[in-house]
Image 1 (cartoon, one colour):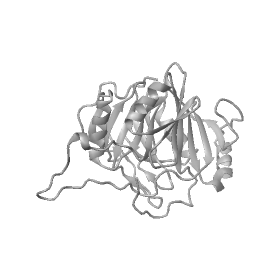
Image 2 (tube, rainbow, N blue to C red):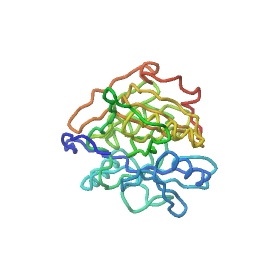
Image 3 (cartoon, rainbow, N blue to C red):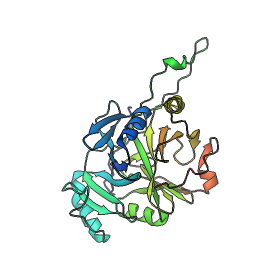
Image 4 (cartoon, rainbow, N blue to C red):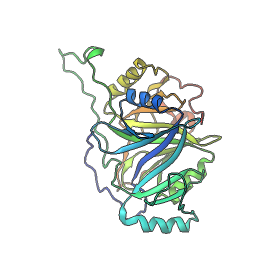
Length: 314
């Protein structure tokens, strides 16, 4: 999906990651994961003992899924930075007393590896910017008088998201996670609502490229994938129900980020979200973050969410 033109895409006065390059998680059965994400509309590719999640028409790998674990769990997060800032990040990590890892599962010679405040494995590496440089184009056309606005369901094309929008992770200490990701990775607070916080990149990104939710443990609540219309959000919900994934939440509209959404419950009781028309923070804008009550900042309109929507099943 193309994006609208934006102001400068790099902020020279701030050191910060520019993208969530990809994330890696594991599940008990790769065949189950392949079935789910294929139905969701992703380009799922076999990669030996793992799956790689792409979106059709885009060369970037957004996620890696590994198999064979007893339950679903996050393996690591990989963030992209500008290549000329790696040394500055190395110095910042030293100043923040964050220990760099030299070996261990997943740890390679590429970039900088360390654990975040929840013990989650994180990589910072030089990479091309994969977060958008402008607000995603939204298409919600209306038919002219005398013309049909839509056709039969059987004639609708499959919904295929264009890119990864963001992920939401559970944390045992929300304030600590916000401080760590701000001081270490240079993420900036967009908005918060008591038990959840949303953070964006300094070099232009959606309202949030990562979010955190307070819980008793750590884990992945959802990954969010960008589509171009409210129509596609709704069709995505129907597409997944037809494939056997009828449980979820939506269609609705969020307050924080303003995006339209539908969450599909995955086989591991977390979610994959179809998202449309999320707010965008250009690189040259200081976004005025706000704090909301949970009941006033969760969603603008939607059916009631499942009672266990915020439960960490990891």
